Length: 155
Image 1: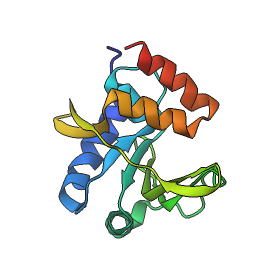
Image 2: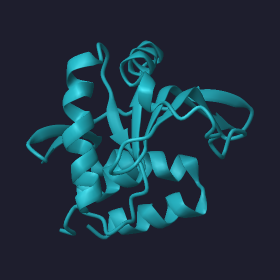
Image 3: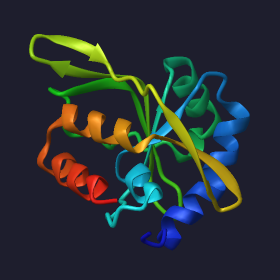
Image 4: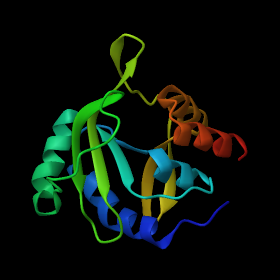
């Protein structure tokens, strides 16, 4: 298993307890952070949180002083959500409330059917199960996502 980077550990230590405390609906860490927590050797540039729209609004209020109002996410033709990016010292946190993926001809909600919890920085972090991470990344189908699927399959 690849060690977790200090910056990922630091942002988890600060943010995840607050997510557990303030989110009223299920939420999950996805993307490169989830792959790293599962043991893949990936670079993590931010912490991606998939939440409900209501919880995304709660987090905008909670972390108002950290809200990055100038950042514009890439991939808006492929993804849509109630998006917010927050600047934390260790790395940014991106919240995607009600995340949807454009699939062929319609917007489809991104769903995680199986969640596992990984202990990190003294807290339990919900991430998609390995097979779920692979399925979701294959649906995203960007080159970086397909590379992650290969790294996850090798675990």
